[in-house]
Image (tube, rainbow, N blue to C red; front, side, top):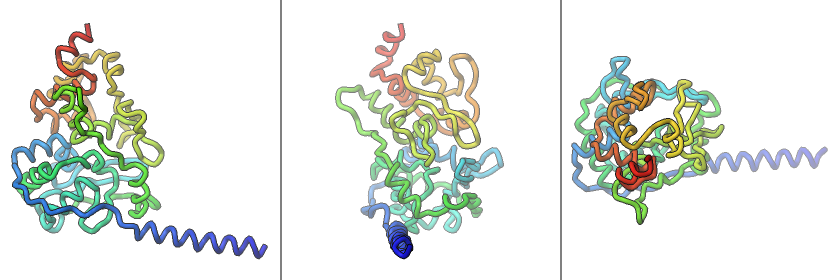
Length: 305
């Protein structure tokens, strides 16, 4: 009995030490100064492609652009997208460009604490310094809104930020946006958008009990989105089986109209309304080509015959 008690005591001490080590474990890496001049128009375009406006604006409740988004109800709790206006107290008005870069690419706030993965920072990890400079320039044009977003309503143990360090170690995947040799410029552009800014996999990939994406089933659909909605599979064979074509998909990303004449609903309607309809026709087609794994519209048409 004494040995058992000694064992339990030792295990408790080791557990406490391990917990302390995790809590003290620093995450993220230093960001080198970014001195590049930002292009406001390109930054605004990238913000649209990245879903910033759609997520961080609660237009249905009469909210101002980027002043905080509608609640995201998940099995882990309810998350509220924060205020991203230039207000210095409730927004990002007192941030530096480097703090902004660390938040976007690494999911780490100015206080050094990791963000909840309801913010899809893993998809933005490959943004270049120029991308960050452009986004930063665009965000500096947003009028300040002196209103805080509600606090996340997340219960124990999911409210423990130190636990996110373990989550990141397990599920912070490289977005794989780098060009692939031998593929067309359009296919590679689509790959960059789909796997990066547009973060299609955030909704259209199933997740495990910990909320991590099942990378082996990328784009296979997700039946458990926030709010109880679903996202269909968008792999090439699934799209083809449901009468989609490259042209139809590109058109839907502009208008929200499906091949059956129906319209997107729920979060996808918001994605189109606040995001993809602002993209160029070439970018929407590139996204469709990538999802259909075709290098040009000509090869896509030939394959569909």
